[in-house]
Amino acid sequence: MRLRLLRRRLTISAPRVAVRSALPWPLRWALAAIVLGFCAAIALWAFEFGKGIAGLDSHSEEELLKLRAEVVALRAEANQTRSVANTADSLLTAEKVARERLAAQLKQLESENRSLRDDLGFFEKLLPTGSGEGIAIRGLQAETISGTQLKWQVLVIQPARSAGEFSGKLEISFSGMQNGKPWNQTLPGGAQPIQVRLYRRLEGLFDLPPQTVVKTVSAKLIDGASTRAVQTVTLLPM
Image (cartoon, rainbow, N blue to C red; front, side):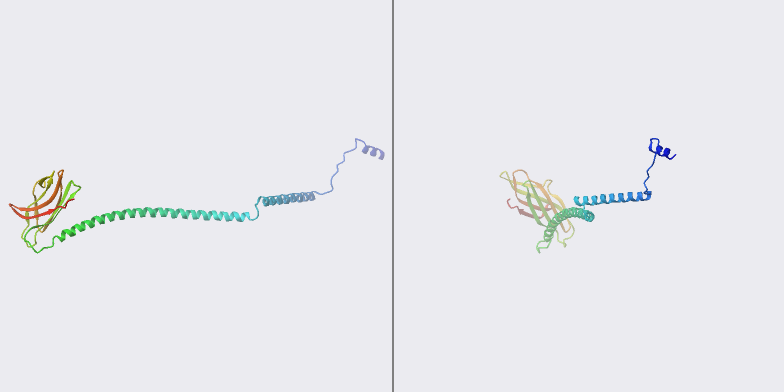
């Protein structure tokens, strides 16, 4: 019987035998975890070593934060600069408008100053001279403008002690040379009506004929058939 069993084990028809390790499975899992941890430690070391080679050291995060802070500061400075530039543009526009307004006001003031000087000269002529009675012609002026026109101005005054209002006519006449010959002419339409209570100022433009040089200008106050006052001025040669 024993021989038969021994022969059976040594032949091909012998039963299969399974060889199992005596190491329990919890210990196997522990060994596997140790191996994986070791591999992870090696991988982490390789990663840190690679960062060191590439220049990504431990200070890179601090530098990144510093760069972000600088970017924020630069953006704020850019916004402030843009705001200052916009304010400067607004100030320049306002200054330009104010300068143009001041120039217009200066021109207006110059015009008013000239008008005031004319009025001052006019009222100075109203001062009594202490001679003469009744209505009189004061301040006859004339000047040639551009050689084609003559501007004239006359002031007629009547003392306050005179009774009533003067009602008559004013005649303006011009004399000189035209083409080398004597020339005389009055305002178109002849003498013009005038009423004076205390004073009256009249002025106008006279178109000069071609080749005419005016030498004297006369103003005459006519009351009916009589002449009440006459004044003549001589124009200085141009």
